[in-house]
Length: 303
Image (cartoon, rainbow, N blue to C red; front, side, top):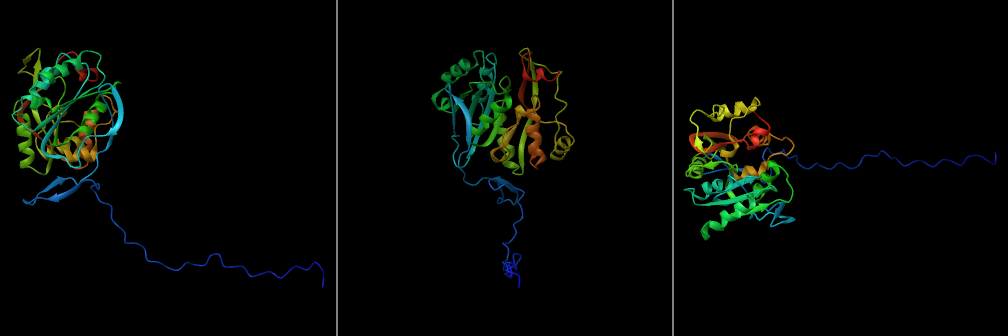
């Protein structure tokens, strides 16, 4: 036998041996509604939006000239019956006091007002502070002023205000417009009477040169849940965002508008919610005065 004969090969261990079978965990179907928002049935048998207890979320805000990342001062649950009115503003010193006064005079008394100044270069902040100081103590405590050090645009200013909102309902208001004294009361009454509706807007009057212009009518507004849904499904727009009131649970679910589409942030904000199944309606009453003037923001994008 040759001395360099190969050693006898050792048998290899089977590497593809099957592991003992274990039963898999039961499969869970994905839910259409996120975990932090659930649908419940109220005593009338209709579905309405409710929120479980949750922690405040982190947001970047600028207050009293100081930038800070902090948890928003929102409680674990939204305050039932409270309406949070959000007013983002930029260089609106000429109109902001009249705007805020229209909110402070609302016939619905359970409200809070959050004003977000987007680094204005005029006297907007001074006018807001003067307005707050002129209020009686029980109303002064309801108004919060948030100032940003840098101009981030309408979407970011609005999102800051939405992140700080505490109310069961959230109303939007443009900083150069006016709300009718019964606007909030009638919108809250409608949402309470229609628990399946998540967004409600109103008709408006056009305020030009300090007077109501009867010849300018908002013909683009649409009424009826199905008709509104069809408009947005086809890429249209038929709700004036400044007149909107939204259930707070939808704000928690969808957040604020995107800052990637300048000039159409309000459309994207509404279309995203309606596209996800939130029902909307427009009241036929004129509860809002839309101010037309050369400095208004929409004129930079639309003529």
